[in-house]
Length: 164
Image (cartoon, rainbow, N blue to C red; front, side, top):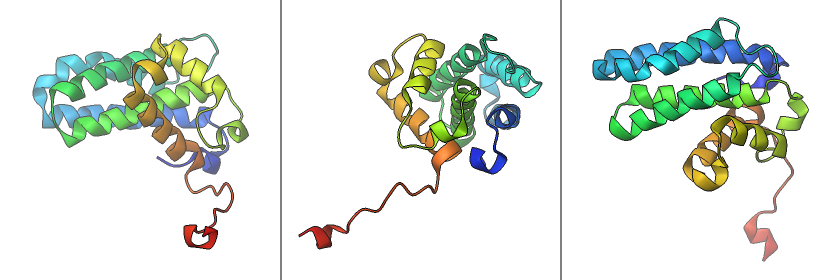
């Protein structure tokens, strides 16, 4: 997915990300037809967001995106497949964008996940993600990095050989 800095507005990235997630769902169903019923809920969420849902605070897009990701995560545990892993990555992007859609881009270009985003993710997932699901927390951190900070330099590190 393209970095948000290229577009300047996080909100503009949400619908295209959901559309990409929807396409990934369709490819996963082609690869493994048996998962079609289990992916229906996630597919409906992505379709709704791709159609323009998520433009107003309090619309629960974050929570629906978290529910969609949870259902995809459960499927990934049961079924193997590259297409399903792609759905998972796309669902993580949608959740991260949903939880950051009303924030300033500059606040998201620092290392790590800002406290405000952490609170929104925890509220959307209905639990402290970093404590209950550290693997999910790590994957969401990677999604945040790729969406907002990929390629940004935060300062120079000295070469280990120079420190000796």
